[in-house]
Image (cartoon, rainbow, N blue to C red; front, side, top):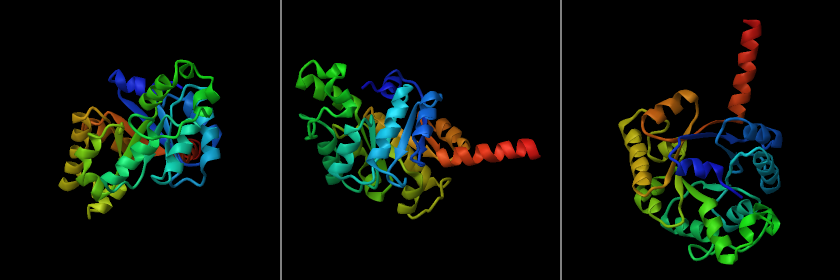
Length: 257
């Protein structure tokens, strides 16, 4: 297991990925072949779970892609199983308070940071990956550094505690869910409002101050360009539904006029 996306981030590079919502391994394989830096497999809103995610992770890794998974909830089983099947980053939705943050770290990081259940599953080539041969302390430290925990900031509670969340050991970054965050703030989809823009900058500053990753979801490439100009360096832009629909319509227009 080698987290190529994290290596790019550590080198100071900007990165871009997208959501996989279809649950299709061929879509994941094409994402690995593409220039995208990561693909975020969505088991929160997608109609699939662990076994399908494992197939998509294999397909991505086959071509050097970085698989992230958005789990369906912050439970131990949701986080642990996706790490065991090879997710290199876990995005956790609907986090509301620091108790949940501490639980996430406990479930997703090995000792001494957390209490992740020890296993040499498919994520470590069933115990035959190179980092398995240097003792248990090396193995757990390697996994802690390369299996990233990224809670979403999409609730008022997460926003209120964002500085404390980003300062927490074991939390590797924040994923901004703009739709639910704006709704939680009482300004549904008012992305150009002063309040929402201030919230975005507060989250970005908290991440930068703590040297943590900050990922902004962007529903379109136009929004992605705006977020990049606002100082965001890591973007998740749209999803496979969007790209497939737009490609079909563009092809139709090109031929039919």
